[in-house]
Amino acid sequence: MSAILHDSVGHPVVVGSGVAGLVAALTFAPHPVLLVTSGSLGTRTSSALAQGGMAAAVGADDNADLHAADTLAAGDGLCDAGVVHSIVGAAKSVVALLQRFGVAFDRDSTGAFSLGLEAAHVRNRILHVAGDGSGAAIVDALVRAVNATPSITVMDHAEVVALQADDGVMNGVVCVRDGKTIVIPSNRVLLATGGLGGLYNASTNPVGSFGQGIALAARVGAVLSDMEFVQFHPTALRSVRRPLALVSEAVRGDGAVLLDENGRRMMRGVHGEDLAPRDIVARAVAAEIDGGRSVYLDARMALGARFPQRFPTVDTFCREAGVDPSRELIPVMPAAHYHMGGIDVDRRGRSSVAGLWAAGEVASTGLHGANRLASNSLLEAAVMGMCAAEDMAAFVPVRKTAAPSVTTVTPPSFEIGSVRHVVSAHLGVLRNGDGLRSAVSDLLPRIESARPTTQPATVALLIAVFALLRTETRGSHARTDYPQHLKKTSRRKMTLAEAVSAARLSISTPDLRSA
Image 1: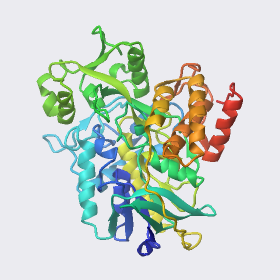
Image 2: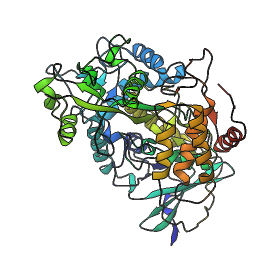
Image 3: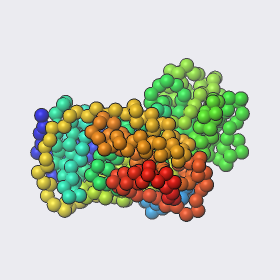
Image 4: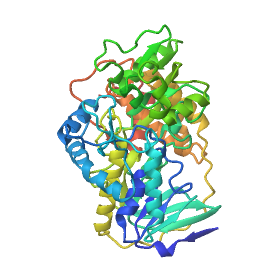
């Protein structure tokens, strides 16, 4: 069965209910908006799993210029400086906005914001809500605000399976709900669908997050950028749990240290030591584990008996795994955590496809460059969700929404397992040309079929092609066959069609080179 949702004609559509999607929907009020989400409102999102909080220069000893400088340094030469200053400069206003939506940031005994320290920040500037349960608490507050806003219509448990475009202009959204195909006519669509960490065996993201929004946008010709840059968090709790539980960087910010299996400080002598940028720490941890050795986080001296109170969420996960973090070493490993690339957008969230916006982890704004600065993601999601909604509200379509085509769609059955095997083997913390070409050869045939692996394979192929073309080591992208850091480099932008062409060329010409 299929149907057209005629009531939505002319209304903007927001896909996703993490921080970016929820803030966008609230920003539209009192004007009507339709919010589509694959689960219950606010669930199945990486936002809700975020522990570290939100970076914002709100302390008396801090300012936006310092925050921007830290962001640019972590981004390793690939940040868009204008975007960086724009987003971090909006932090105070976004904090105020979130408070109006009901978010209650933690405060100290004086009533001032309680600010934490994380890697590569020169100031304590991490805002938390409910300690290390920040993401869930922020999402809960925003969900309550959405439910109390009559201008927002929520369509939950609806899986978006395709976007419709007419001559390069957005025309509609196709989703499946309760086995029924629903076409939503709209020429104003915001994708806020999250990241792609679920493509990896070891990830802190929801296991079903394989970059759905990227695949949807790629299929209608949107330009993608920086797809090779996947950030691996160095301290996921090593256990059988999936997704892996995160041991927040804030634990190291409070003095915990990384130890090898012989009890030696792993990061001693490295600039920044245990709070060095994530790419550096992740590579050090990965090298130990790849060598068959174990790595631990030691919080016994720094926190001890205070651990459960200071980090209740981490403490619960540790005890679930049979570890008492106040008295025992915490076994850790790197895990896919955040994607810096995605749908290429401008400062208003506009993609290259007219009528299509993106915000949050699915988008590539240029804020993060080659390596995201800790806790900048929730800030970006809130800022860009707001900016995109404001731009969509003022947007005058180039033409009226045409009558979309209605085709019954088989309910999606995404098979990620075999793709996950390829991605984990060849697109992890350490990469090399042979592995990347092997990944391309395996993935390319999958995207040219209607198999259940098509959408996950599309996203994985984009990562592999971008990684193969970047013949250097920079930020989160580490090539063992190209360990050098090039003096001149730039962001790369491609459509799916261009990436497929490059993939075919890489197979026929194995010595393909491109910085």
